[in-house]
Length: 475
Image 1 (tube, one colour):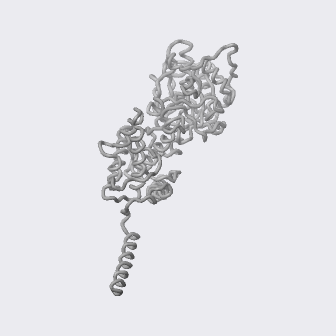
Image 2: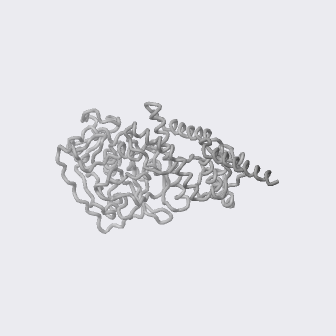
Image 3: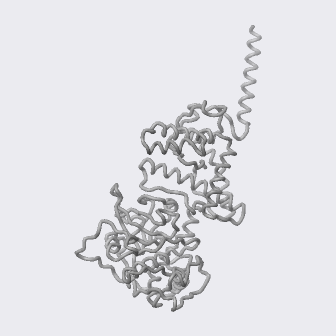
């Protein structure tokens, strides 16, 4: 009997050693049963870091080839599936998982999915939570947990389909297959960040929400370099530009609670800069269009390309960037600007100035500069004068994907040297919850923001520098 027990003990030790060795040298996607230890928050964060390493390494590799800095994030890729809510890492019922085994990445995703489903089911009494339950529990007719626990290859296929849909929707064409793969990695990372941010909005921690738009395949610094061309330094100035007239707010006038110059018919349609950083030209034409409307009652679309091509001697740099005041001064000195119909936007700065007198559409007599940082002055100007050109800090990642709500990002700056984008302030107002906002017209196209517009926090210590560099033309 003693010999038998000894032999059994030896066999047990040998088998245990083999199993341990097999676990250590097993395949890349280990199979294991989920336990409480595997699903606690600390373990989840460890899994998150491990599962993201490979994707971040690929982004860094591609970024090097494109002379582009890598994504500044430590977060791994998570699938972007409607209804996904990152609301904790509770224990998941192993019996609900086919075979009772998951890869580490799948375990993390399934735990989050299970939490979202449970939360939605628990609050199904309200109509809002019923919608949440519907979107969180099923995707394409399949149970959310079942879909997420499929082999990683199928998850990658699902994500590839999302990226393909993005490319189709926004007509994205890339020069090489390698660049397409690079843009796919960026898209996936951006989509995950948007979803994580919107979780904060969902629980009341953010006053605004983000969405995927046509810029979801760009790194933040690429986005800023491509589109945000407000250049206060005027490095290429060849003509001295005078300061504008001073703004004197109207006295003995009670300003309205809200203003929206779109309702008066003083604002033309939202346009897109495309791949041209001439935001200053869009802002300047918008302000002049508003003043011409107030003077004549007629809304005319003015030529953005005219300002891109013809204000270089005033210090502007075409699609690289520029300022609004030199544009106003050019229109004054030139005794006119053409209309969009005779001098259409080309999204390029390779041509010389082609202004023709017969295309004349409007002119100005100078411009007015508001006091730097004076939001009350800006309010008075918007209420009593019309749409006002302004510069802002649009460098934050949250600005790139803004969708709705009152924009407030603590990282946004108001110093003059931080202004990098030009917009048009067309109004102001107050949300039902009491949040005050400036209504700005942007030039990123109608797919960005609220149909191309943004509500940005008003009287929030000159948030994003909305009143740092504001002006309007005189007519």
